[in-house]
Image 1 (cartoon, rainbow, N blue to C red):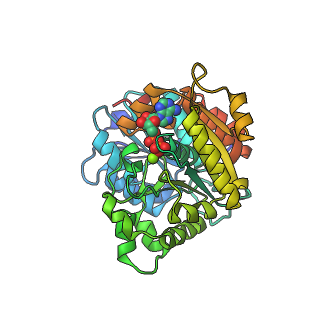
Image 2 (cartoon, protein in one colour):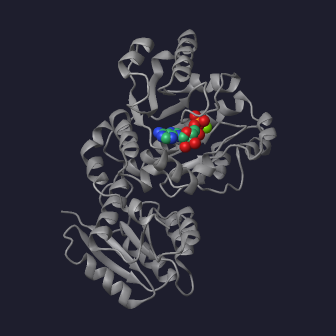
Image 3 (cartoon, rainbow, N blue to C red):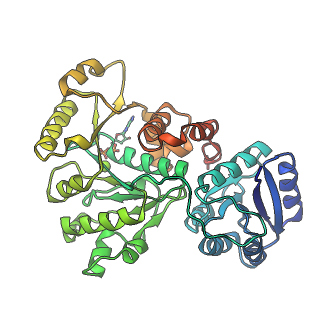
Length: 408
Ligand SMILES: Nc1ncnc2c1ncn2[C@@H]1O[C@H](COP(=O)(O)OP(=O)(O)O)[C@@H](O)[C@H]1O
Ligand SMILES: [Mg+2]
């Protein structure tokens, strides 16, 4: 059995000892080194090439955030897990932006610790297993990569859950696959992806198109904002008047560049058919047509389907029924009859989970992973986008570590 190698970084020796003790009986995990500050962590990470680094934040000299940034830049295959104490949300966010993959809040059990290590390591498993002390080997992953996909979440009606679904689906794919996932907020006049994910962008798509006439991936890449799940986000303009600067030509270019560099590209859209949404729908591999279980929404989705049929895009459609309540909504059988199709996903109505997730900026698939709505989004993602990883993915949902610790 190849063990998962771990480097423990904490300035307090007792804490390092505690962590080693907690991992002592885990047969598949081995602590290969320990460091007392950021510089030593970086040096040992390069020397030992561990699968996972457990990183304290507050340390003298180079702190955990700077060390995370240096390690994730130099060694993108090494997953960093931040160890923090309650009440450090600002630092945690910075650490996540610096490339940390997950985090644990003290005190944690050996089970929490081991599961987090296994989970972050699994999601980095595209690379081949490596031996602790040997230098990294250039290897091509053996698994056959599915074709890169653009998934456009659309409805000509507002308020049906497009943004909620875009964010959670994107986070879920990033978290569970460890693949390259991008989320583009094309709701140019009222995008709220960064609010839902609690990110503060330094620049947006509007600043980007102003910068260069000819867009290149290197430029797009600098505007992508990292989320703790591994997801990268291209934010919508901060002010509605900035939307004008972005043309359908721009979004086409951006999507083509992203498709070459990401495995999954999820696009959130405004509730209308216009030049821009039509060109995006044309580039989509899948159109996740979202609706709710009320008459106006069903009328909209029926019209949307007709328009997409006229445009010869209806084959790409997957219907996503959101806010589904058994008690008041139109019966599914009735709805299938009207639309002549069945929903690919049915997400329950759950105001409490959705609202608290949106207001905190914590995606529910991470922080409320056991809720029915999170499970429904995950099942949808697995069924359509990661059929080969069914078993492993199920393992991962047994317990949501992030869910339990994300309560600050
Ligand atoms: N499954 C759900 N259960 C309860 N409320 C939901 C659900 N999905 C979305 N909502 C609520 O609906 C509102 C609109 O969601 P949003 O994702 O912004 O829709 P859109 O992007 O289509 O305009 C949000 O306030 C959100 O709280
Ligand atoms: Mg929206």
